[in-house]
Length: 613
Image (cartoon, rainbow, N blue to C red; front, side):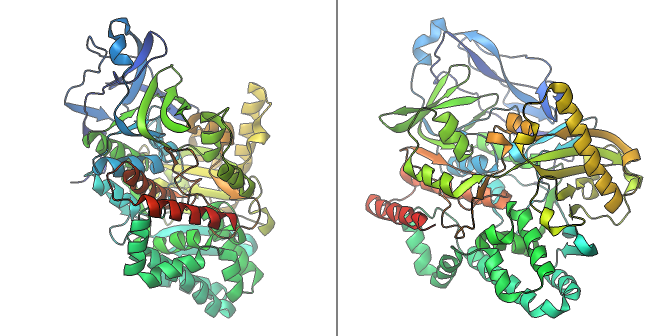
């Protein structure tokens, strides 16, 4: 069965959402509904034009069993319902095994993995569609990916195809289109490198550019493969669960020791063991910058290896219908497993009782309770906002001493006439024209995706989508009047377009049919990420992944998942984080085996190891 979303609909079987288990703080609260409503879009994201709702006399949602969710449908929470006559029901504790805050890929993978193990899960999403940075929006016939269009972990082989596995676990499958070139680099000194899908083709091209470094190139990427093969040989579960961890060690001791050896190492140090050419080392920096938004000396070797090898092992595969289909499919699968997802459910607080996380409070006053709480928000948002007023745990203080918020992005979504692009244009491009030192500077480098090269259905006939990213700090955008803010967006976007016109596509400006610019403030508003950040960035050269926290936290019953947890940023990394989190939570609520004595010992050991960072 294919869920490729070639047509404008896919089919979902929804359970009736039981909201009676929440307890309102006032006598009125808003109730979830599912309606095929028309949408409009502002500042790059979709909202409903109406607020229809259907409920029964108990305030429960009335849904047809076979409900067709169209691509422009949303879930709404828009009607106030009087619950005076139902007060007793409204104050009962809910029986959720886990409440997940946020429906990014990490949160959805954790939720679905728990659901298939038999847990009852509730996902709470602030926005009207799932996905977070891997969501989508529609405008004027275009379907835009909110974040990256480069999809790792989406192949049909190995153990690191985590997106494929997550979908399969809930009975979903998506049609994908192989990308023959992961990225085409356009770099200073007219250095042009295509990262071909076939590893030998990529290595041959890179070695042809740097023939004197051929041996060093083979040795560096050879070490990447050593790490990747070790990861790919293991059953990936929680590194915080000792029964699994010791079992894997006894079954695959060489692979486990390999990963332990590389855990505290960075890609830049290993590259410098084998390569001397400054321009080649700068290219390795650009490779790692795409992975982690920092240079190779600050990129953990394990992270680099996962991405630099998976692009050849499984390849980059784009989902038909757009990246947003991944989150939609996972959400459908979650509901099919008997769990729930609520939209427009803005969590403002995590509720603690006797130091344990027991529930969440929504912006409309409702309180929902569960055995465990999983936050897909960043650690800064989790401990700085959702637990505002609580003492910051020591391990979170240590995390914030080691890591700062990575900058956000300025994003430009454009629709252009197809004839402006040459017929052999690659899907993904990285542009840094004149000066290597600008790699990490705001607006210095440009990442460009043209997903319609692979899937033309995303744009009106005769048109292409250009999705442009460049790093930008939110401080550049604060304190501006509305007029100055819009003017600045135009100025910055014009400069970026001029650079692309000069370097890649002459005449592109005159071919623009649609354009929308999002600033870091846009990302902060719609993705609920502090300062619009896309994850943690080391304050100084890190010791690999040694300082990166896992899923458990110092707060009993509270777990974190996503890019501010091990192993860090990127789709494949946050999916890994979701798998690990689900396993640890499942053990803690009694679904998986656990050993309290070994648990305590392992967690103390991992905590001590993080102090070495």
